[in-house]
Image (cartoon, rainbow, N blue to C red; front, side):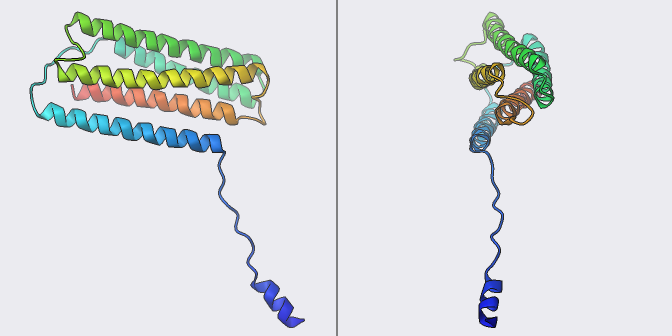
Length: 196
C-alpha cells in the first residue's frame, strides 16, 4: 500500500499551459512580420541615402495633418473599447464608425500627399528619396486598408451584439491592430522628417 502511495506522490501535477486566442496569436505574428518589413525598409533607406544622389524635397504638410487624424482615430478606437466593456452598444457602434471614417480620411489625405509630391516633381522613379516616400506611404496605406476591413467585421459584430463586456476578443484584435498602425505611421512620419 505504501508503494502505491509513493508512486502516486511521484506523479507530477500537470503544469498549466500558456494559452492565447488563436486569432490574437495570428494578429501578433502579422504585426511582427510588418515590423520586420518596415525595419528592413528603413534600414535600406539609410543605406541608400548614404550613397549619395539623394534629391531633397519638401515633405507635403498634409502628411502632418494626416498624422493628427490617425492619432484621433486611435482615441476613438479606445473609446469603442471602453464602450464595449460597459456594454454601451450605441457608443460602441458610433466609435467604430468614427474610427473607420477617420481611417478613410487618412487614406484620402495620403493620396493627396502623393498629388502634392507630383506637383513638386517628386515621382516614384528617378529620385530615390521620393521612391522611398511612395513605398513607405503606400505600404502603410495597404496595411491600413486591412485595418479598415478588420473594423468592418468588428462593426458588423457590434450590430449583432456579439461584442460586449464578456466578449471582447474581436474588438481587442481590431483595437490592437489599429493602435499598431497608428504607432507605425507616427514612426514612419518622424523617421522621414528627421532623416529627410
